Image (cartoon, rainbow, N blue to C red; front, side):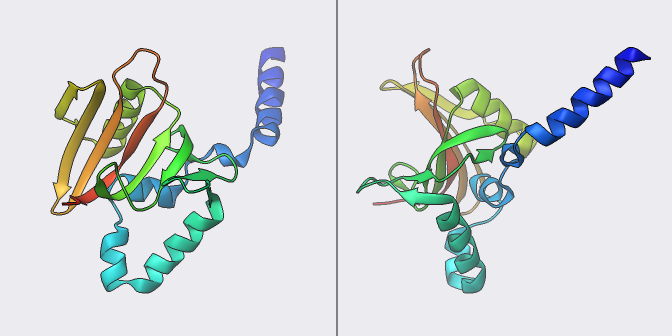
Length: 164
């Protein structure tokens, strides 16, 4: 009986103490998993595009002249802390990506769980590991990180096409 009282008290305290920001950002998660596309919205749903852009700009701020933006507060996607946001690129591709504070294998597992599919097109070369999964025309989920045991960050996102 005492254990259930203590457990109930601890649960109540943790509900008050744990920050609400620990929850995933649904809009960023959907964009990262290619469930939404700013490319499509910019052509056919400008109000939706503007709404997402406002949301993103409210969560992130520019970092000097770098291509990435930094979260203004704790932001999470797929249970992983977001370190950087790239609102219009995935490396050399056009798309949307985030750098998360998670090693490659953890990020891959989180994405595969969310998708309900395995990322099968994976490779390691030139000091990098990457995986991708095309889920529709102009929608490819990508994941990449340094091929190093010390690497604690992974880029995850959705690209629409490579720049030529």
